[in-house]
Length: 261
Image (cartoon, rainbow, N blue to C red; front, side):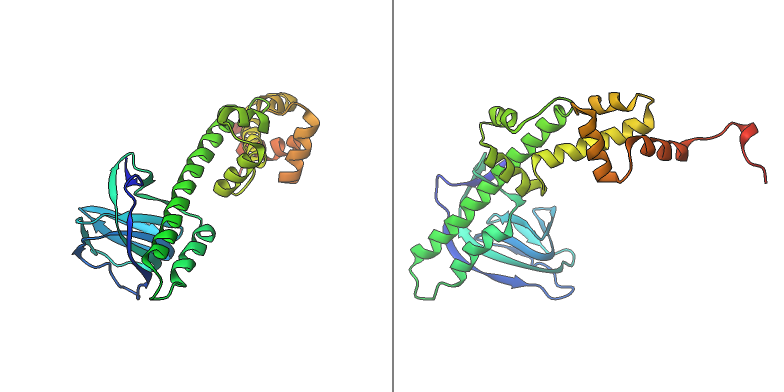
């Protein structure tokens, strides 16, 4: 996968904010500088070398120099921050062409650039540009690692899983695991795993006749009491009542027992 390489430091040129008007389109151009786009609001649409690109809030994109960019269709009033620069791209580069970013973390570096006066030395602009690129690369690595942790949880949900187990599998501390996972999925690994197990339990309760304590064990709960409390806390009814209510909805009585008009 093509990415921006950091072995040859990218060189900052210029930056600013951009707000589109209603029905405005991206310009048609072949630009001689690379451009980093940090989407804040709306949706930006353009075509690049014949490929349609659509960006929404929380996404970044690296437009490479000398590619054909066309505004074939209207954008939805996008607002974004852009940085012109000269960079080097190659297979396996440090920063992918496209990805998501945490605006809270990136905005503090953007503000540093915006607060620089016209007399500020070029090194200061370069400094905060590097900080943005470094943070973007870190966030992409964090997201990939969080995805791997999620895959680990889903593959092993029927077994007992602790933070120590995850830490050994990915060489992370407990705090690192919780921070990375919550930043990507909005909840801790424990909460994510609990919700996944309960969802699996719901499907088994409706689609099978296994005893409820067996269902509890099948989805990874070591104690039935823990399963019962978690189930009731999330759905407001017991597993037994859930099975009866949901199963009744899908029950089709024999022809001789169906009501007649």
